[in-house]
Amino acid sequence: MERASAVGAFEEASVNDRSKQPEEQVEGVAPGLCASCRHAERIGGARSVFWLCGRSRTDPSFPRYPRLPVLQCPGYEDDELLSRRGDGG
Image (cartoon, rainbow, N blue to C red; front, side, top):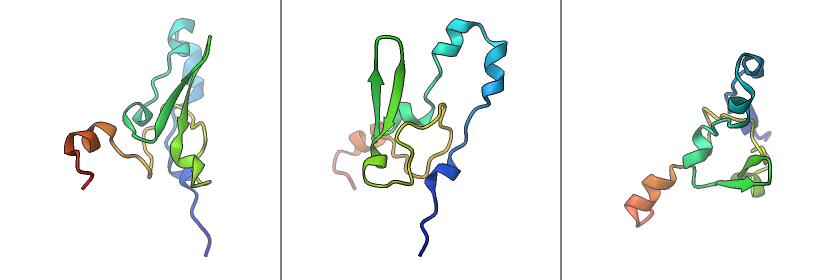
């Protein structure tokens, strides 16, 4: 049985729109769903910020560093919703 790729389910912003924005706005791309996903990890360097998808560790159909902003993701789980419920179910 062939496994469907989660990468195809990601909706990405157009890179062509970047040329219309001032340079300082281009550097601060919003992560979209990654900002509140329990599987996402913010990786910050001296000049760059990346979002690591934790699902990529166990499921190769998820990209390790998805293109931002991520607007749809089949593996998204709201971190705040899970912590409010507390019991996990």
